[in-house]
Image (cartoon, rainbow, N blue to C red):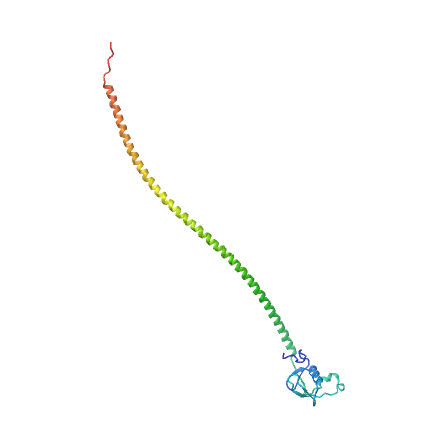
Length: 211
């Protein structure tokens, strides 16, 4: 990271810069210089191994708060660690937010899959019920069509029978009128014959009684 020391791998604390441009913590670079074997009062950069001059006086001759300035070729630099820390905190917050969003996304996808399966199951059940209803309606429509056809057949038979009955009734009435006419004629003949016989009996003389 740009704001981390490559020696301690932490945020810069009192950063200093070597002549080659690499930045380290002052205490880390001092420890590196003191622990390394130097030749001709020079040390190697921990990053690129570029030599730079150093002066190593006796530490007991210096005050403690001046010991960090024992490397004259190393200059102090300003690194905005506060802004970096804010960015780091923001990055961590964004990273946590991304993690939470991924978790929510996975949960939403899992929930969506479960809801999709439920909807598919409902669709399957509703499709089966719909198909069964269609088959039932088809059967009922067929039965209704058969009933309508039967009704039409009975209506035609009824009309045929009605026409036949009307025709027979007409023939029977006609025959009844003919028989009534014959009956009237016979009745008139019988009445005329009866009157004639009665008239003959009235005209015939009565036999005399013997004295």
